Length: 120
Ligand code: HEC
Image (cartoon, rainbow, N blue to C red; front, top):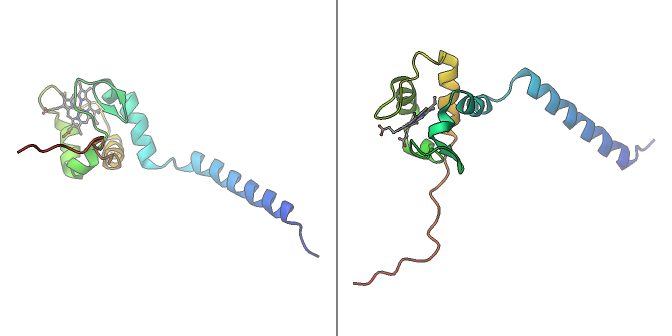
């Protein structure tokens, strides 16, 4: 007996849906947890990512291109300039999740709209 394609479609949809539910409960991807922490730990008050956030500190939309894991970790743990150290405020896991999240922030700077005129 052939199973009608509509039934197959529903079956696949249901499967995808169920999988998406179990994923959320069991293990939210680490860089999503990092995004949540970025908000919850107050980073967002000073730093913008993707146009949202404060401007006391540099925009971090593309920080994953500028800084590697170790530099990111050190910045978070020790702070610098007007940024406080977060060593006392975060657990080791939270630091790693933030680092992973920031590594994924790799937006390119906006392209120049018009070609530059070079007058020489
Ligand atoms: C009180 C404001 C403030 C808060 C809160 C803050 N930062 Fe910063 N952050 C800064 C400033 C200012 C700098 C620039 C430091 C410098 O010039 O040395 C900076 C720099 C950085 C850099 C390096 C940026 C670059 O372009 O090299 C990273 C990464 C960073 N912060 C991540 C975080 C994270 C993650 C948090 C939350 C745990 C956080 N910051 C919380 C103000 C803040």
